[in-house]
Structure formats: structure tokens, C-alpha cells
Image (cartoon, rainbow, N blue to C red):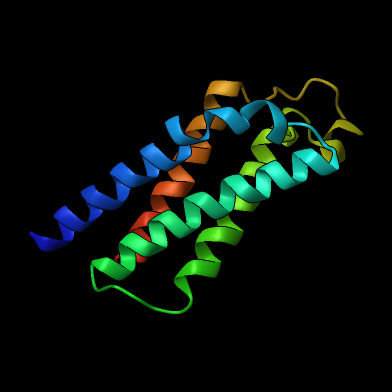
Length: 123
């Protein structure tokens, strides 16, 4: 039962830290500029530290969780924010008919990945 409660707490924080508290960074973090890269870094650090602090308060501290949260979040958001899901350069050299992932599917992949990160924090 405790694991379910801990998951609910961390998942709730994922939603709060990834959406409402980050909306002001949305337009900046999608640009491939120094400001965009910094905004993406700030977004990922706020989310990672927020989740990690909760993990520590729940008594689930392990040193590897903070880098896992930050690097994983940064990689996934870089893929999503820079629109890398919209093209596959390797495959498109051979065929222009490859269907692209929609924005909605990219968001669902992004959130599924972050949920997996939350689950890993329960270990």
C-alpha cells in the first residue's frame, strides 16, 4: 500500500512540475538557441530536483536517482521540444513515405517515459 501512495505522490508531482509550473518556459525551450538550451536545462532541473526532493522525503534516497531523473528528462524533452520525432533522417534517405509521429503521440511517449522514471524512483 505504501508503494502505491508513494507512486501517487511522485506521479502527482510529475504532473505539477512538468506542466503548470513550467508553462512560462514552453516557448523558449523549443528554440534551438542558447536561450532555448538554458530554458530546457532550467525546466529539467526544476522537475528533477522537485521529484528528487520528494524521493528523499519519502525515504527512498539513492545517489543515482538525481542523474537518472535529470539526464532522462533532458534527453526526452530535447527529442520532443526540438521536434526530432517529426523526422527520421536515416530512414528518410531511403523513403519519403515514412509516417511521422504526431504531436499528441510524442507527448504521450514523453509522459510515459517520465512515468517510468517515477517508477524507477520507487526502487
